[in-house]
Amino acid sequence: MRMPTPNMLVFWALVVAAPFVVSAIALSTLPPGTTEVPMHVAFDGSVEMGDPSGFWLVAAGLALCNALFAASYCANDFLYDHGLVHGVSRKGALKVYVAFAAAVVVLQAALLAFMLSVG
Image: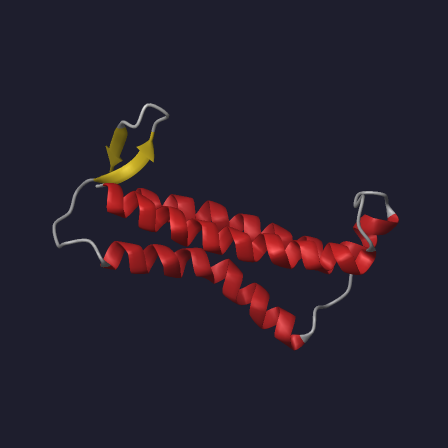
């Protein structure tokens, strides 16, 4: 297992913490006393409401995904040597992990903004 550079350690720490920061910022924009926020938009356009604390569960799931990307980044050589990484070079795989982790944060921010604008 190879240790990431100090810059990459900072990057991984930030992308693991980012879902919680994004959720905190989104929840801070709600008016005081808000008990329901949009949680799900169905294919027919109907909106299901839920408790704002549900955003924290989503943030924890996304932080876990980014933590798994970070672990994969560190264990890339092992994964590559055992045939668990396909269709990309060793260095290319590292870029894929970074891109996916960044995409998770950007998508969460965009989806939270959309969900809060629907309500």
